[in-house]
Amino acid sequence: MPEQTTSRDFRAVVVGGTGYGGAELIRLLAAHPHVSLARVTSIDHVDEPLESVHLNLTDSGLRFEEIPLPAAAEGADVVFLGLPHKVSATFAPDLAQVAAKIVDLSGDFRLRDAQQYAAFYGGEHPHPAELEGGWTYGLPELNRDAIREARRVASPGCFATSIILGLLPLAHAGLLRGAVQTVACTGSSGSGAYAKPGTHHPLRANNLKGYKPLSHQHTPEISQALRDGAAAGGKSADFQLNFVPVSAPLTRGILANTFASIPAEVGREQIQEIYRSYYADAAFVRVLGAGGRQSEVVAVKGSMWVDLSLNVGEPADGTRQLLVSTAIDNLVKGGAGQAVQSMNLMLGLPERAGIDAPALWP
Image (cartoon, rainbow, N blue to C red; front, side):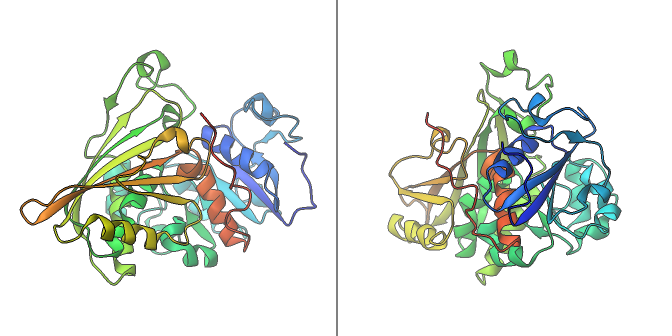
């Protein structure tokens, strides 16, 4: 990682940099051609070099600093919040004093409904007025133009990213109706850097386990975004999402399998065209097609790529089943990389700058 420099166009600060999300932000910003990493704050490992925690880094020239907001943002063009859910929300008054653009990676500003926040995040939002239009939802495939104009962006959740991207073209086309069923498997890095009983390696390494069935906190976020996508296409989306997340024995990646019923007269070629047309200008979405190569985590690991495979069933009783399989890296497109993608748009930089590396193989 290069030392701090002033030769690049913009300066970034990471608030809360000791977790996996913070590690990915630091890794990506270290190599960004237009942005220098000026500061990383934390309440842990204060005054220690970044590489003492993130062993993939070398001679960063930076140490973890314990500086509160808004002082931590001094001199920055963009501030990334890598704080836990329900922590970012407490800083809302301090964030109002920050002149820099802000990208928050927690779930605290994604929802517009304070009641849904309370129901799915286990407590009332400390500053519910912040949910009433002050933040732009940071999914470029849905809100690219709005992100360009935004000062504050709420970056999407990892499960939400995978499931929304699998269904956005259907919603935009007015084809998202009825019960939608999703089972999505995720790697252990999605549970954070600190071990818990359900993520301890000996238990996870040989196991598959569902958790938070039909009650995961990303559920209202997914529904909100899909209804926004339908509205953008001049349509409505009358659907019910049933989502079961699964803990899988891998460190990185999400594979989401989503079933939706579509009218029988909508065939394989039309579905494929709907998806290819919607994502024609998307920077990182690959539509693998209908009946072709299937999405798999190893093909996107360590990258921003989103692989979508489509499987269309035969008609029965006026409908047919569509299976959309979405593969992403939960820490990159599902986390820090997507935050950097939004930053690029907010700063007027090329959307793919600093995040266009190919996936790791295998």
